[in-house]
Length: 364
Image 1 (cartoon, rainbow, N blue to C red):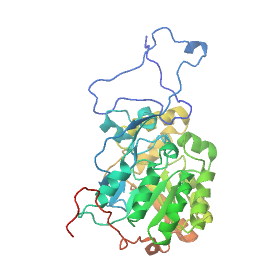
Image 2 (image 1 turned 90 degrees about the horizontal axis):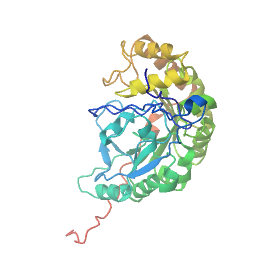
Image 3 (image 1 turned 180 degrees about the vertical axis):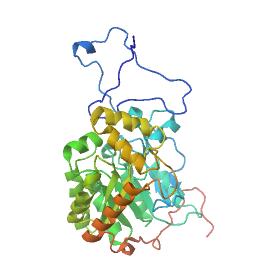
Image 4 (image 1 turned 120 degrees about the horizontal axis):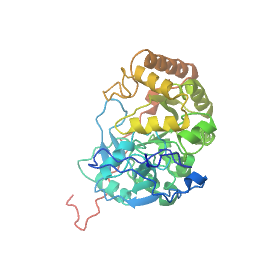
C-alpha cells in the first residue's frame, strides 16, 4: 500500500509540490503516519507563510552576455518571488541556495537588505562604465514584500542620484508608487518601464499568477505611467500554447489602448526542474488540456519541452513558433507598437559617478 501523501494545490500558491532540487543527493517524500484526518474531509495542512531571509551577497550588479535579451547589466533585490507564477524561468535558481524550485521559491524569499549601498559602491568604481541597469530580469522587483522593504525604491534612488539609466519589468502596479523618481528620470531620458500581462482573464490570471495584481490593475499601471511621461511597454509573456496564446492580440490591443508604445512576447521556457513543476500544475488545474499544451510546446521545440540554444530558447522554431511570431509582428504593426524603437534609447552621458565612501581623500 502506497502511504505517500499526494501533492495538491494550495490556496494562494502556484507550485503544487516542493521537490528536492537537482543538487540533493537524497530525496524526501511525505507519508501518512495514520494520524491524518484528511480522509474525513478535514484540512490538515497549515497555510504556507512567506519567510523573508537575509541575502549576504557582496556584489549586486549582474553581467549578462546573452544575445537573446536587450540588457548587459541587471540588479535583482530579491531571490525567489511570492507572485507564485509556476512557469517562472527563475525557479531553478533557488537550487543554488539549497532550496526547492517549487514552493520554497515562492515562500522563502531572499532579500538583499544592503543592495543600495552595494550598488552605490559598484557605481563609484573607476572601472564601471555607465549602461542601463535592468530591474526585473530574474524575479519581480515589485513583488509583495517590496511594499514593506522598499529595496527597489532604494535602488532607484541610487540610480537617480548617479543619473544612471534604468529599465523596469514587472507584473505589479506597485511600480506607480515610485513615479516621483521614475517620472523625473524619464523626463531626462533615463527610465522606461514594461508591464507583463499574461492574460486578460481574471480567473486564469489567479491560477497562473496567484499573488500578482489583476490584469486590470496592470493595464491601469501602464496608463498611469504613460500619462506621467514614462515610456511604457506591454510584455505578453509567457505565451503558453493552448492556454493563453489565443489572447496575444487582445493583450497587445489592451496595452496599446492604455498607452504602451513598446511590446514584446516570449514563448514559455521550461528549464531544468520547471518541466516537472509545470506538468504537475497542468494536471492539477487543466487536466483536459495537459497533453495538448505539452504537445504544442514540443512542436515548437523540436520535439522537446525545452531547448536552451541562443535565439531559439525565447521564441522556439517550427510552424507553431513561426505562426506565433507572425501574429505578434502583424498585431504590433497594426497597433503602432515598436514603431520608433530609437526613441527608447536611454541616455548614459549624464552619469555622475558617486563619491567613494572612504576615510581616505582622493588625490585628485
